[in-house]
Image (cartoon, one colour):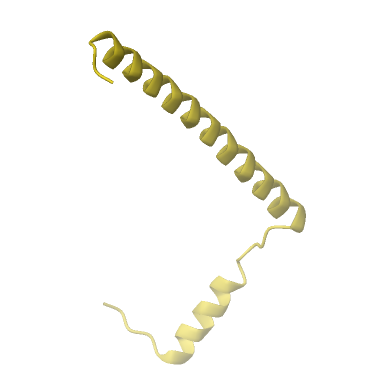
Length: 67
């Protein structure tokens, strides 16, 4: 394992930190909106699936005479 002295480590960290590209306000806003839209669509989808399964199970249990 190669060892570096603390000064080299700090220089490497600063060099890597300078490569960071921060998103613009517009990118953050659009991404946040997309996350909320996708979360809403997934919630609606699973609600519909839940209702369908519940209705199916209620129908099957009613058909066989169990409430």
